[in-house]
Structure formats: structure tokens, C-alpha cells
Length: 501
Image 1 (cartoon, one colour):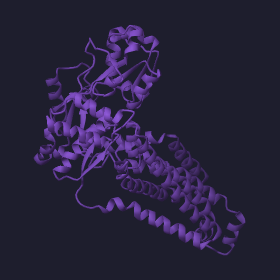
Image 2 (cartoon, rainbow, N blue to C red; image 1 turned 90 degrees about the horizontal axis):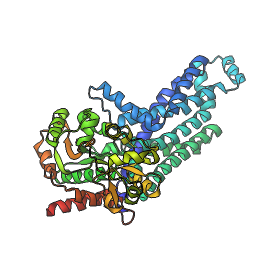
Image 3 (cartoon, rainbow, N blue to C red; image 1 turned 90 degrees about the vertical axis):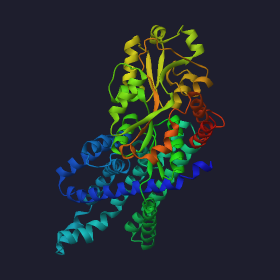
Image 4 (cartoon, rainbow, N blue to C red; image 1 turned 60 degrees about the vertical axis):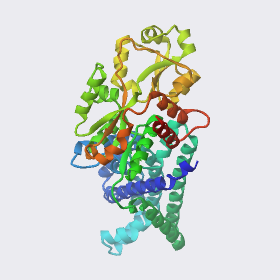
């Protein structure tokens, strides 16, 4: 538990900073737009319609859409991390603020407006002295709603590489460490409740003209904003960023790499939970400095090669494709896609390899990880063997094995370095047509460090040093049901095994 609590304050500060910045941008857009729209019905309808459409887009999808948009802009614009999360969350916060500004101004008693005009007030005076004070409680209600939504949605920022409490939630889900999930959820809920309570005091102060509640709420908000700025006070050089995808092996390898870089004197931060395409593009953009990918993933998905090639040819082709980023070398093991069944299930359906699976597939359910069913590897295997399953379901990687165990899936897209294969006594189905490419774990370095000998010297000892048996044991330490280890502990164990070799 101590390893869980160490990053919690820092992640909470990042989460608060991101949420506050998004709300600030939403207020800058929504308040003046609402003021104008309240007096122009057509503009109000169009603005509220657009904001409503944005609100219907799932938060995760909205965050993901900003990555390719910023990547297309280029010119040094960071496509990963704070910027895409900030823009997406700001859009997500627009609707409740904009709607309540329009409703608050339109809901004013016409007699009050006529009285203000009768006193000879200008439009600006009327807005400042009459309309704004009367509409303020309604506007604050919208800001409260937007605040709660934004703080909750900010947990999804992990998927685009922004630090938030979602780091705990996503890594906990993948490793089935429910204490991490609970800590992330409770911390996010606490931030939302505190923020909502402070804004409620301000709303009460505005509605009842209570100076004490207005002052107390405002001081609390200012204190929160100061805490939100804490992540920016560190100063110093930019830390080295170690990237990781969204499963246990990646978390372990990221910590293994990070520990070596820290011993070499680098400050290290992590961006975890990235998708395959996002991680590779982030490396090329310099948003992450080093991470582990898999040769088959890049060969089939990024290079669009439909046929496997010998390992030397594959690695040489990938190295050329990645330039000016660098392929430092393979780590010594493969994490290949493979279809697997329980041994009892394979015997019951007379399945011995992928060819015999084709005959049984129409009565079986396939459980796959979140990427597999949309990847070229699946298309290649499906076409090579004519696989047609009765149904297919997507799961987070660690939950596929639960689905197989519970009978919700009959076949899963397993990973060859996963410790659960041996622990669950699964049958990995041979691929006689060699439809799947090799999946050597390969260490990739960003262009900024491709010639940095100090950086490369810190991580080069990992090349060819990790046998698949050791990686399986490290993975199972994190994925097992009892006596689970954290990815940090598994990385330390793996490092110790490498030192003894």
C-alpha cells in the first residue's frame, strides 16, 4: 500500500490543475458567448446545439480525437499529454455553463429590465449592476455542474498521456489491483465534492447576499487553484518520459527502464495506458523518450505489411521505418499473439491447432483484447484459416482470462509471455500457416536520445537480457489473484534476476 500512496498527492495535484485549466478555458468561451446568445435566439440555438452535440460524444473518444488533430498541426505543438486533455475537457464543460448563462439572463423579470432602462442605465451598466448579479446564482449552478463533470472526466486523460488520478484507476484495472482503483476513484470523488461544496458556498453568497459564505467559498477556490499550480513549481529540466501501453508487462518494463535511467542520474516520469498507435507517434514527436513495443505490431499495424518476414529482415525494416527514432534492439523474448483455450475446452471440441479450430469456431465465442479485433493480425489469421466465430467480445487484457475461466469466452487472444498461460494450464493453439508475425519485444528511443550515449548506455544492458520465462514470472507476480505484487516490485524482482545471469 505504501507504493500506492506515494504518487497520490502528485497525481491529485495534476488532476486538479488539468480540471481547473479546462474550466477556466470553458468559462472564457462560454461566458461572453452566453451573454451574446441570450439576446440573439438564433445564435443561442446554434451554440447550444453544437455544445449539446459535443456533450453526446463519449469523453474517451473526445480525448482521443484531439491527438490526431494536434499531430496534423505539427510545428512543435505537443500532441500528447496536457494540451489534448485540456482542450477536450474544456469543450466537455461548455454546455452546462453556456446553457445556464443563457437561461439566467433570459429568466430575468422584464419589469426589472424596464426599471433599469427607465433609470437611464447604459447596456453595460445594466449588465454589471442588474443582470449579472441577478443571473449569477443560475450561472454558478451551471459552473458547479461543469466542475463535477470535468473532474470526473479528467480521469480519462491518462489515455492521452496526461497525468491524473486516472493513472491509478487504469493501471489498477489492468493489474486487478483494486486498492489502486479505489484510491483513484475516491480521490477523484473527493476533489469533485470539495469543489462542488466551495462553489455552492459562492452560489449561496450570491443568491442571499451572504458575505461570509461568498468569502469562505472564494478563499477555498483560491487555495485549490494554488494547490493546482503545485505541479508547475518543480522547475528544472524536463524529465525523461518513459511510455507504456495498457497492460501489466508494459507497466513492469517501464519501471525497469525508469529505474535504470534514474540510477544514471535522470529525472524520470511515466506516461502509461497508451494505445499502440499513440505510443509510436508520441515517440516520433518526442512526447515520450523511450518505451517497449513489439515487432509484429509495428510490422503489421504501422508498416502495413501483410506477410510475416524472417526476424532479421523484420528488425532491419522496422529500424529503417522508425528513423530518426532508434530501435536499440530486442529484449530477448517475444510477446506474440496466440489463440488459446482451456485444455478441457480444446479436447471437448477436438481442437489441436488453428486449422481444427476453424471447424469448431461457428459454435464458439472469441474473447479478445481491446485492439486485436481491429488489427491486421486478426484479419490475416481469420482469412488464412477461415475463422468464423459465433460471437466475439472485447475485454481489457487481464479480464480475457477471467472470461475464459467463467465460460463467457471459449477462445481468447492470449499473449505468449503472459504468466497466466502456464498458471491456468491453457492450450496455446499452433499456427501451422504462420499467419501471425513474430512479436519480439523491442526497445525504442526517441530522436532526441537516439545519439545520446549516456542515455543509451543506461538502458543498453537490457538488450537480449530478458528470457521469456523471467518475463512470464514477473507478469504473473502482478496478474495473479493472491499475493499480488505492484509493477514496481515486479520490476525490481526482474532486475535482480537479470543481475544474477
